[in-house]
Image (cartoon, rainbow, N blue to C red; front, side, top):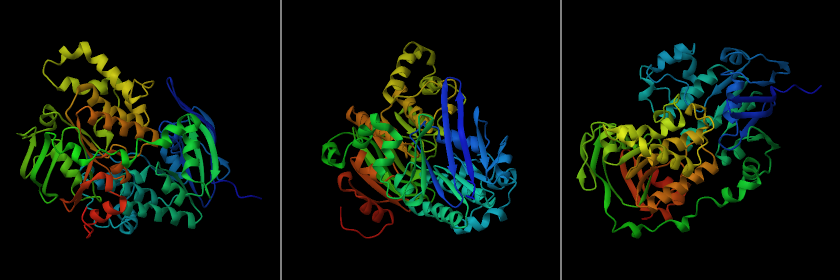
Length: 498
């Protein structure tokens, strides 16, 4: 008799008011396999994972574990059934310490330490408040917590989106370990190279239903994209937002006014004398390995921290920002890596889009007349799904990210600070964001873009900076910034002059 599936979900459906998140999803995960769950943003992947984790119930459908019907009424039932999940956003309370979060999840430091040591994180201070810990470390800590439960099925929802290449290897090692021991992994990632390298089979969702199920042996990325997007969107997605040949030459911006300048900026021991200039109409890229000071640099630029020394200039005028509001008044606005920092999750899409309008002036009510028009333009330009408009937290990750950018389209700005804006979103939404950034630059806006996705430098940017140990160690025209050049610079290794 054939061995029963480790997990089988049949005809699972979920609706949020007018929004159908899942129409009818089937999923079968066999023992000893790494199974990919793929689809564009809004296809229903995260909804299905949350149903299997019993974060909320399905409207209809059935779930079986090891061939036996499973009644998953709450997350404890899911854990008891041998399912552990690393969700798309860290499952940690930001105002508590790591140790306090461990106690809430009924785990101890000793439980997770063996896994943390395998990830080179055995030194982590558990007295730190979660909000003071880098996102990548939180993602690996979430993984260590899940592995400490010794699961039969580990579900990973976009965990590698926040990780560098080196950190992602820790995830892949854990996935192989589980597969080799006869257990299974359900893996969600928009990085199709990872999927093809790591996964055995795939279930692909489109518009809340299964579009394809396939063995991944010999399948190329084009086939996966076709199944994810369908024929109608395939040609546009495959064309992408452009090629490096279309990148604007560095010289084009050489005579443009400098809109943002850093002069020997320092912050504690994290930012160590950074200087650069961003010109009007330019998209300036920045890349670095994790923890090289890029987070702190963006905190300084956005007004979240005052530099220890050095100077910031906006349109040749000194910027002394005591808070992000001071930077915003100067036209300097931030799209953060963690979209939850930028959103009011329980408020409507339109309230989120219009929220910066109320902070621009004490006479905010004078903006009411054109507020609706501004918001409508932002919704239309970014093709934001507003069907679940009552709460932005009900949107897919891609649509939430569009809202974080769209609120600045509605309120206006001069310089956009984007910190990894395409992290964890699908190829179609990425293309929309790339196109928007290029349009903004062509209209005279400026963009400072940090990205952990190295191909984005040539796709979007005019020029690129590389940080290492809090310093700018490399600068060049983006057209020649190949991945090997950027990786060499990011490790501060000797290379041919750019």
